[in-house]
Image (cartoon, rainbow, N blue to C red; front, side, top):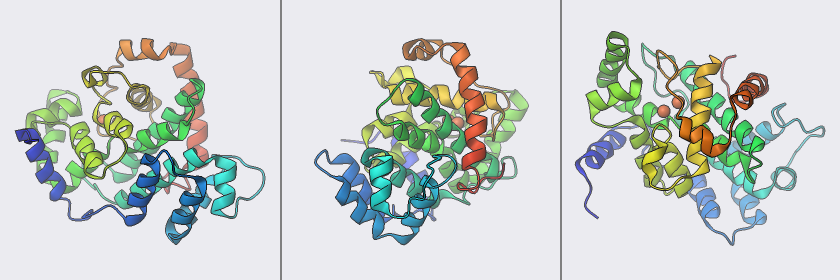
Length: 289
Ligand SMILES: [Fe+2]
Ligand SMILES: [Fe+2]
């Protein structure tokens, strides 16, 4: 299929990102497992155990206060049994992707620490809302939240000067960052993130959640993942934890909240939990409290 002019421009932006020439092999393998309905826990255990860094990271995460297991989880196969196969494969992808981007995106107008804090808290918010909604795999919502603004990281890293124009416009015109991105680039970070996810052959639910987190209505069909990430992003802004460069809290789409059946009181409760859970995961994610 022929690419649209925007897609060609986004491709150029992604290619300009020297630090991520390709996705690590382990992510490709875990993604294959993620996309394969016939894959099993043993397949995942083998792939993760072959990568020492990922194994250490995952064991660190599942043993952190965030998960709160009383005993130590010392092996990947034990983690698969306790956390669950589907939860762990989501975490494996999220943790690997997070490592790839750590340290990127430094900008005078936005601290990389604040930006990561925003992403981690949005992941926590997605998981809290998913648990409230009794979703089967809440970790999927955690990973989608973690990744939702990855396109902004790409833009900050590959086009730092143009991105300074975005921040200048945001300050001078008091507008949303997405509005300034459209004015400067012709597309938003959400579209860049979507193209990056597509490029890596990540599952379509994740592609859409990243691509439509600011504009969930335009996907054509609704997905609870994109809807939850939209709400998670807004309550992350409202929580005051971290920053993605916005001057004020972006508007919450009332249709999305209604579709998800989330009362305002639930969102307030979710925000309390986010603060609590962030304390438990911050050290593991290497994000300053
Ligand atoms: Fe965003
Ligand atoms: Fe965000």
